[in-house]
Length: 349
Ligand code: 5AD
Ligand code: FES
Image (cartoon, rainbow, N blue to C red; front, side, top):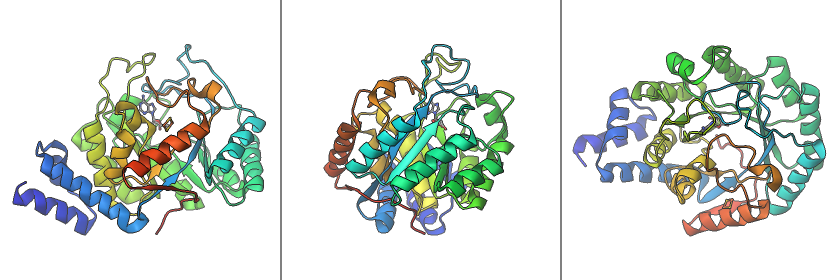
């Protein structure tokens, strides 16, 4: 490691900011001492705020119908091979019951943009969950909606909202999405979510087609500007029935570097080691935590629909019951000195 590389790491940690030149060095260096030091600093930063505790979120993938047609995504509307499903209110509540008994205190309702789930239906689901489990947080991840809709879900009791921005670069956004979608609309949704009072999450895929150091730098600056409570990043993984079927996947190495950088420039963030990271490497989620992650999101969806919620190929955990995933995750975290806790796991300001 050269003196200037060490200086870069210290400078990022001290200023909680990064220049494009510094980003270039950290993403391209072949010196494993530098990348190890980067991850060590990020891990220490997370530990200073969150200790050795890892927050778990129970992910309920309640619909794979989607009206959008994003080029990267396996449940895009043009994918006629996707076997579509929706969970009923009763099925969703039964997932929550299983999850609550296993110690989950956050439920993440994720789905495609499915017009079947009207605001009224979404609000009913949120209300029923909050009524039965008032000590739990409800996170929604159901895409772009109007301010009125976001406000209605919030008033029904939703606490958090995940909406990855996917890329903060206009031209890159165009490469990933059909023309009906726009970056400005997405950014505006995130602004509204913050304004309403949600704990808000943005994020992006690492190694998505067309991503460059410049687009990544814009992603990092967007995170600084939005000041989100959560950031979700994971590798892009091609799905065979999408236009990006033959594009290369993002790498473990790049994802770990970016997780660490995000922890350093935005220290308090709730940062998951994602399923996609666990998909490209058998120890991906453990490595993600060792690079500054502090959240994992095991699946609570019924096993009979698991393999249908396929955003990308080879997704892990599609055959495992919720209890198996929870136990597996606890053991994985224990193996690296961390403890999965029964806690809502709110943002620590
Ligand atoms: N590979 C990795 N992540 C994907 N997502 C969608 N498709 C893929 C893919 N092929 C991510 C997007 C989306 C989140 C729910 O999943 O970033 O916001
Ligand atoms: Fe699902 Fe390991 S976390 S089987």
